[in-house]
Image (cartoon, rainbow, N blue to C red; front, side, top):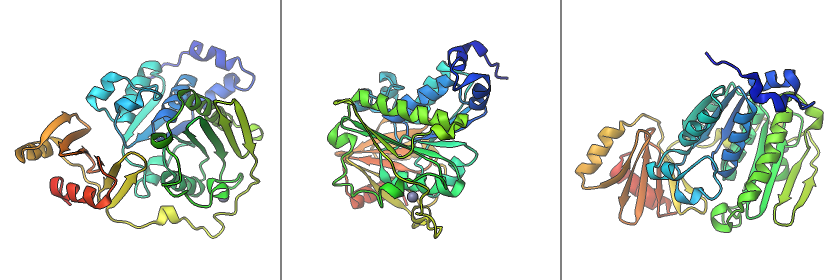
Length: 342
Ligand SMILES: [Zn+2]
């Protein structure tokens, strides 16, 4: 049984905006953080310390050395162990506040699992690094009638936009479709200033708190853009409600089925998601791969990772794989078929 320590939240409860009643609301709230990189780390830390009742963290990736500059929940041990980010985050957060029900999901959020993973939560927080997933979240938020808070960071700029379906403008209202990957800068191509992650996550957290506490009139409408180098904040007011879904059209939720191979933008990597998710016995698979003469430098309960010439293949227990060292879909599919199967 979880024992609530009132003293933990005393400084937050003292805020007129929160109070005893507000703290109770937070305790009964459930939030899903989709993507646990830089923004997801800082945001999850704030949410857990604030005492939200339930937090689910979904991430498809594992911890690497280049993450540590800004992804505050991870350390060098996580890198050595190649821990999945959601798992490493939950282990860390559990030391911070045992009163929060934490759930790590090591998976890619896609149209196949989006409803199952978001259902039953009060709010969706964007910690992703790509517009494909954000457009999917935008549709899922509308369909499930669950608010979400879009956030992104690149270079020295962070943006945040709170979105309440059927009331405010949505992501598609400001961006008709995802920008093409080659003109869209990412953290990998443009870098990212560590402090701007905190600026954006702080704004995102505050808007989330307003939503969870029911201070709807105080939610900042439209897009908030923060340049952390020049200390310039710009607000772009977009009038709601949105008309994007009047025909109930959800192109990202409908999409094609079958095996998906996705180039991971700016990372020189491809993610392969098998057409049917089945649990792969990793021990068995590791033995099979060893028998082919493959080197298996990393094995843990979540993944195995092997080097094949200039490529690194990481296989997760759901059959999903990330192939680093190529942005070519055909090469990635060939390696997957050759070593893992179809
Ligand atoms: Zn819209």
